[in-house]
Length: 118
Image (tube, rainbow, N blue to C red; front, side):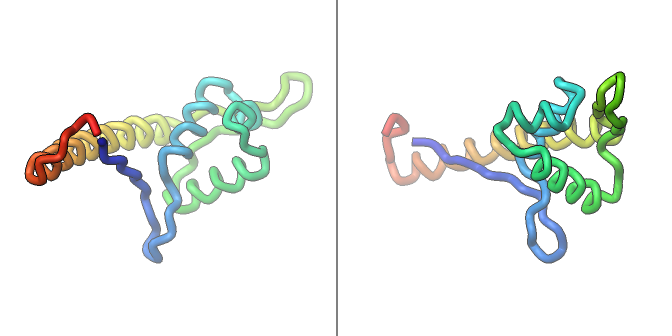
């Protein structure tokens, strides 16, 4: 038995705009140097990926990607320095919150005398 923690960042209305899926998409852009290829690797359409990336940039008020158009050299994208820092901080936050949740869940399990292997 284990706890599953889902972390998102939400706007002032409570609408989520950042979660682990967007982290994976941005890491994919970093790896593939392309929004289209990162989206395809996740089974996500390019228009959907573009929409959620633009939404994230609007909510953060910062550009996350440097984009260049196609043509002879083909298009591509790269993370901005802000995006690299944001992702690193998000990953550290996610790890710390997950570790804390795991510790608290173990206390919960122990208090109820629930076998951890169930």
